[in-house]
Image (cartoon, rainbow, N blue to C red; front, side, top):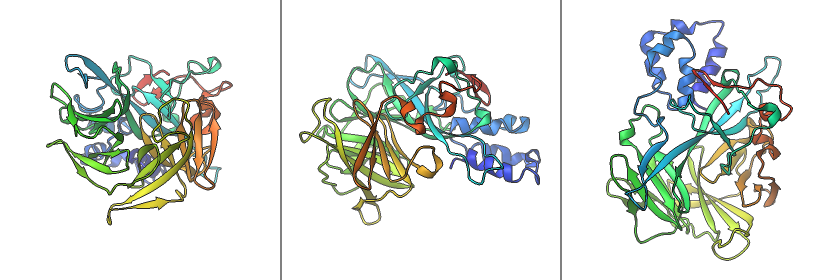
Length: 390
């Protein structure tokens, strides 16, 4: 749970007993600077004028300043643009008459930053990153985020104007209080090459020019971690550009490895296709998954048969996990994924796969009521300080 959600819950519980304006002024900036997501910072600054004036929206040179123009990974004389998107949990306010908390939905927005007031937001499919068209009868859709609890769950990144196949892009650090001059971008491109760019450099550096078979990349515990096609996890020493082996080889026989962090643990999800040792065409379909957790204390892999109430979401640009109990139309012990022509839900119990249309409205998890074609909700997207339009 983010700091913003905790503040909201505490404020509701203490409403009759305390006035937040009475909080010692010296604590305001300390609390504000413990919030690392832009949307959390906006919520903090919306509490009252005193809190709003205690901290700025974010640092002028913070990672909120997207898109970024950086050198082309292959041709340094050209430039590409690093853009970011965020996955949010949208929860309606709790009704006092209800004994259980309301269910939430997942939405993904491209371009929410402290510089995006002048341009519209794009609503994206959380898994495929495809733009979602708002139904005509509810367009322009307006979502007043003050009427909902909004929690940022994950960020993803894309290189625009990069014409080569790209598997993954990650960025660090992501806190709105970090200095952009200390930032780094890491990507896997073409068939599995690994490259790193440090802000201030004039070109990307190839990491490990002997192994071009990397499958996935994440930021975990403040470091870049990568897995190759054999399931070996390594972390990148960004000073020496050396790869340090972090796990034994998994030796899984799947065709694509995904890295997922869940509840502080690191997992590899092995995806199986119907066809050759590696997927070579767009017609091969997903037939199975295997899940493994890294036992970091003993340096061994644990075969996972039950995710309990957790759900893994394997997206084209990011993978993450959520608690099924928090979301509408969502059961635990499942893996959501995309294939060429559909969205799939793999259930670890029974090894079954249910398929749905790529249109996110086919899954309640990705389709909040305010996007429904018969929605009578108001139609503006407001995020505390500013007005954003879908």
